[in-house]
View 1 (cartoon, rainbow, N blue to C red):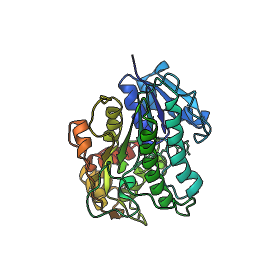
View 2 (tube, protein in one colour):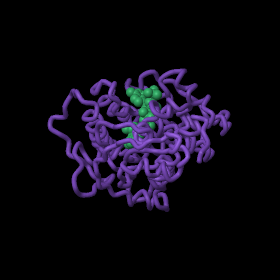
View 3 (cartoon, rainbow, N blue to C red):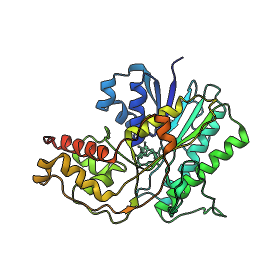
Amino acid sequence: MAATILITGSTGLIGFRILLAALAAGHNVRYTVRSEDKAKVVSSNPAVQRLAPGERLSPVIIPDFTVEGAFDSALQGVTHIIHAGSPVPLPNYEPTTEIFQPTIKISSGLLSSALKTPSVKRLIITSSIVANLGAVPPPTAVSAKTRVPLPDPVPATFDNVFDAYVLGKIVELHNSDEFVKTHSPHFTVSHVVPGYVFGHNELALDATMMQTQNSSNNFLMVGMVGGELPFPIHGGFAHIDDVADAHLRVAFLDPQSDGPKDFGIATKVDYGTIFDHVAKAFPKAVAEGVFKRGTVPTLPVEYDSSDVEKLLGEKLRTFESAVVDVAAQYLETLGKEKA
Ligand SMILES: NC(=O)c1ccc[n+]([C@@H]2O[C@H](COP(=O)([O-])OP(=O)(O)OC[C@H]3O[C@@H](n4cnc5c(N)ncnc54)[C@H](OP(=O)(O)O)[C@@H]3O)[C@@H](O)[C@H]2O)c1
């Protein structure tokens, strides 16, 4: 029987790339969005249209993902769930209500709805390496297996988006582990745990969106158009294509396998190299002043991604290839030659 995959977050960098990969692999995809307009962002996207999914792709509108039972009817007949629809720490978000609470509530709501749905075989949740690293990265390597102890008590409110994001991801991981222990669900629960994700984003349709509505790629753009990021970001990188592949591989792993259940992807990088990669690939655009050296400070992290390399059966894609892909897409949106 064909898989029916429910994907959250398909109006975002990661969820949309997973949606494209799932359609390309021939699966049926149901995607949850908060409004009709958001559904159209997905269905009208040229990359989706090129795949001509017809009835294999359908939206479900759920105005508030955090309401109890929000996913109950959307999950009918679903075999796999990929949950990539969770907030990232944008500076304009209210830390407690728009980051910490939805990070925890959407995931626990999905787990509870899945428990009532016999057709569900697997639930995969997109986490972040900050869930294993904590607020301050330790000097020794961590992996997707690492659990950061919860503070006692867990704060109820936050005034900083990054603190709310990190603790949200830590609590989400603990809650999911606890859910599995308590309920022994009929489906498996896994996390895919990326570092900063970079690469081609088909949702960025013009040069402005490339720099402002491009999730983590916004940071990469800063480094290639002469900007200056005022704070450091974790130097653990994941290529968007590896992230999408990993979600789908985990979704179709043998459920009896006694191998790892969570898979982290983060290769150590120095963001000081962004412009060097661009200059090597596109010297003409550099000479024309389209690309300029920017500053993106790196916070070094040690992370063990060996499980995901085994899962994918190949070396992880390089940072250079992600940088070049994003730079090439930027040139395309500007209508400039890629030389
Ligand atoms: N990008 C990275 O570098 C990175 C690294 C590690 C982990 N992650 C994780 O990967 C996931 C997706 O990240 P992304 O880069 O794809 O982010 P993104 O481009 O900002 O997309 C976020 C997605 O989540 C949805 N979403 C956010 N808050 C929501 C809420 N309260 N209720 C319902 N839907 C909500 C958004 O829907 P709307 O369009 O309706 O807002 C959008 O589809 C997140 O869990 C993030 O923490 C990302």
